[in-house]
Length: 133
Ligand code: HEC
Image 1 (cartoon, rainbow, N blue to C red):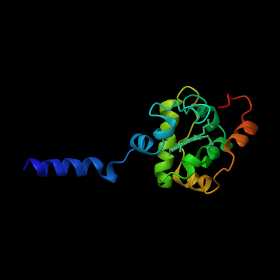
Image 2: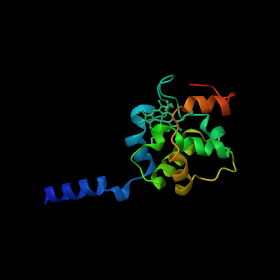
Image 3: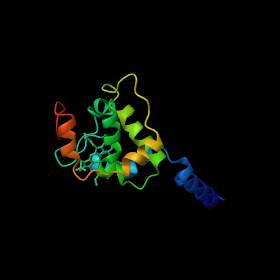
Image 4: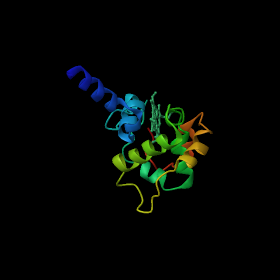
């Protein structure tokens, strides 16, 4: 009986139906960006702070899902949108505009199809005022 309970608990806990953005972040992003989002600059940028400013413009919303780590993550469009929204609210609340509308799966689908070969180049062009990693 105890074994059965363990199996049930195990399967319920690992069920994809229970996947949530925080778990997806830990599984697919934290290996590089670290669990607290601070990354390992300059090789891996911090996701804490400036992304709210980036997410404030259409070009920035587009950029977030075009960086290779996000675009190529083994997540559905909806899951990736949820992870990016989670990162924005969890780590960038202070720079996020009040008018921010969460990213949608359809929007992310369009962006991630155009994965960036040189994200840093585009970032420097569009947001020269932001700290560069
Ligand atoms: C293999 C390591 C790796 C993984 C995994 C990874 N990233 Fe990244 N990420 C990077 C690196 C390196 C950059 C810098 C741009 C580049 O060279 O790709 C970056 C850049 C970014 C940026 C742009 C930050 C800025 O300030 O311009 C965002 C947003 C981002 N990643 C989100 C994510 C999300 C969300 C995930 C998980 C779905 C993820 N990354 C997974 C390594 C990774």
